[in-house]
Image (cartoon, rainbow, N blue to C red; front, side, top):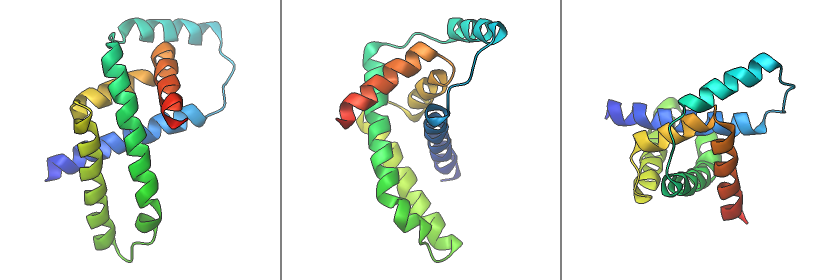
Length: 133
């Protein structure tokens, strides 16, 4: 149970980090930053088109789950109720990932890589936008 909760918290943290990263205003980049990004992109594993698509689909479902439970979670009367709701949300998030034929680890790996790989992030965001239209 504790392992499931920690995996789900990692999923949520990665998803929120991606959202925060995508919403942050673009900053001016120095040459050093450009060189660092090139190094990070070289270290990023190549993901198949199918895996990126599945990640985008899972991310879209996770966003819907989060939006669905946002009001209920914020209105939890006590920490016990909030924890029960969080457990239910975590289970739904895990199910959403697994229904897209991915493991939680696979999903997190793509989301984490997208935080440092501009091309992957752009590809992932394009797919997410297409699904929302």
